[in-house]
Amino acid sequence: MNTDITASAKPEYPVIDRNPPFTKVVGNFNTLDYLRFVTLTGVSVTVGYLSGIKPGLKGPSMVTGGLIGLMGGFMYAYQNSAGRLMGFFPNEGEVARYQKRGFKN
Image (cartoon, rainbow, N blue to C red):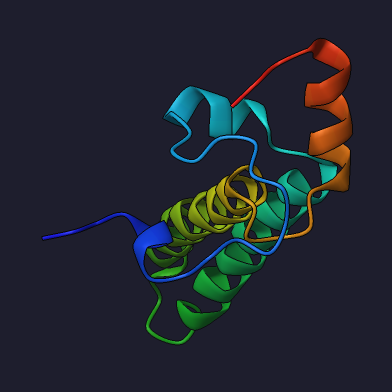
């Protein structure tokens, strides 16, 4: 089974790293990624709390909603960061930063 996404789609932007490791992707998070991550987590905690009011399970449903939002927010931020490194999303900032540091693919 081929799991290489570049086999089915070609990047539209400059490729910084074709197969970035986990640490590089997380280190590449920008302010917008963190904002999305925190916002999704916060909204999920609120929805979990509100959905638990009627049955009287505010605490457990709030924690469950928060954990789901935390995982979803992290995956969304990770997807955007990896997409920029692989050239699937606009990445002008990353290209400039990596060229300034002198990194190659």
